[in-house]
Image (cartoon, rainbow over all chains, first blue to last red; front, side, top):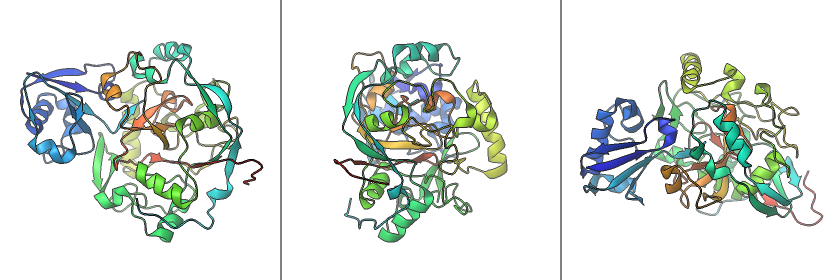
Length: 88
Length: 307
């Protein structure tokens, strides 16, 4: 399993930590978006592909947008999805 | 960033405010976080711990723009230099659609809601869809720089703490926020209802107002305008926590050292996000949106006279 952490800015006072299945980073996020429809529009475009505006951190390391497609998430890792405007 | 030609003169060059500097306590005293907790707003306490307790700050005198950089100012810069913004190069800009943020093809500073929109009649509105690099390029051309967040905060509230530029009592008529249009907003659902009504009439057109539209009643102690709402404003400061050990949202902690501090809130916000000490943090790697602009600053030297 992997841990997926969202910004409070996206969840307000709701849940911020979720579990997912390890695998290719893009697939993990797509699967998470599918399982959590409230997050889908924040993460996926109308074509079902990942939007690019947010940042993704894997175990606190920023994954450049160009490397998302080739990044694998191992069991026990933490993915943080961070919007471009934080705080407030 | 390639060197840019300098501005010979722009409207905003002559509209700066001299701030005398000096020591002050930067940030919100803890009672503000207690107050926020009791307001029924949407965010938990750890969302605001990046602004409190205050830290000691001291500044040399400096100049800061009285208002955010306008469409008219930015057009002159773009014409003079041929500069294209990050949003123009990317081919899309971030707008809030009917439901949520969208990467809208073609949206940029002169097409703020995307194709079919424009800036006719918006010369005196703050320019939007401005990335951190775009703001710095303009500032370099204008012979200025971005203000640090410390400079921005002192200009907004003065040396004595105040919640909003005019004082500690909220007045929705003093600033361009969502509450200026919709009245008191208590929840995100109320905000969404307001935005849907705007969207149905205008699409994702930024609800900016001309700079200085709230002059007098909305100005800061130093006479700066639009420091609460209208547009989010970039600063030069790399995001950091005032207190490393303070309990803080984990994703907020991740952007420290990476993002740049944004101040002032925008027309999209509730009263809580347009406080003088409110800190937001923006991705400086080319991102912008349709509520994001900036103002400039410059060092003050002994005896200088900028009018």
